[in-house]
Length: 587
Image 1 (cartoon, rainbow, N blue to C red):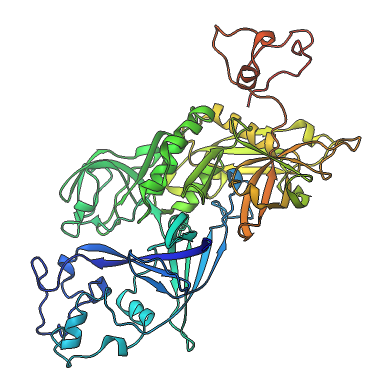
Image 2 (cartoon, one colour):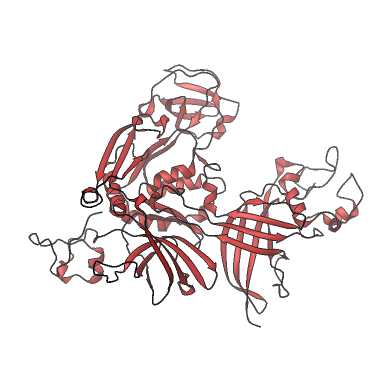
């Protein structure tokens, strides 16, 4: 029999690893406890000794050749639909969320009666009556339905893992399975036709402003008021100090203070930190920890914020890959700031993206991607032509996204006042593209205003470089392209580079000019047949290279690879190389 495609849906149900009334579990059938739990937190009779565990439930479409020998697969899937994620390149699309659009999935399932075996550890006792004191034994298969009971026993499904595994059944075995990870956002109750829907998003949804903040919210307050010269204070309620670090910075009112802590007692090692003003504070005033970034690289700052989100797994961050990217393209971009109030992590990541990085969910690698705003550099370039793989193509100029000027405000006057306006910043750097502003060119001004809390030491050189890179990419109206490709191009991912040869891109003579585009969106409307791509022009016109070692030869003797990565001096008179090509540019 030929192999057949199959899609499995897995959900991780949060449960308990203990046995009711045995060992560490103190629950008993007495008093107000009339029924044994279902080993879930919502039904737990002894929550203080609850031991988190996970049970994976697997679903597939009904079929006669269901794989056997493994865990139970419930034949309940009716349909699976996926909306692919998009990426917001360096936070440049103000009409999109800072992290682009989340990949979403909707799974429609059929509800069914179920005997609870393999789900309820005490199913035999439900039947005998030993698991409850309020009624005699009963048949679980005759009560309710699978999903109705699941929702009642496990109402805390939000944020739990959902996986889509797609591959083939070959000889009764699952082969070539590809896994995609999501987190559950919604589960509908069974309707009158027994239909249930699971909805989920990719793991970046855990970073949404309404789900995760940085720094974490503190609930301690001053037990007794302090004056402007006090050197210590006590937190209330009793024991709340355990939720604070042993040392660091905190904010009370509009004053930042450095501290050390012993139990609930704070000792202030500095008052009026970061230009704030020492002041008296009243009993009951909130004591909030400050998130301090002091000379932190972009990749490390992004990682710190991601890992501060509840439930965000460290395995989703390919830190070594990030480090290599930032080491090559932004090693000297160091952020320095204080986050003085709990702020949405998605918002903070969006502010970092404006500093020259793109962050997205890599649906292929099942990790978070990070790439600097830079010229193409050792990227795999996919050749796309009308003759080979381009089934349809449309392109439009996004004039609204064009830039002529960057105004970059840095150095907050008062870190406790956020980034609400220019009046809270001490510096403003103005960078512009004179050619784009020339009356013979566009002849107008398109200003991008960046109010950045992340450069509170000024970082003038970084501001200049980042502004120039933005202008280099957006001084001309960036092209947005939409194309359909055949299935052989399924390896294309978000932020990959395409070289497109099409009648849409020509020079003044009408000759087609291969043009670089960067992928911002990807979907599979007909899996295995076609893919749809949206892409943005990769408008780093010019030639770029890195400073070379002193022992390297001159341009004439350099290899093609050395010329691609190197940086050589041109003739001082002609400003050209010996082969007539233009000089390298700094970016």
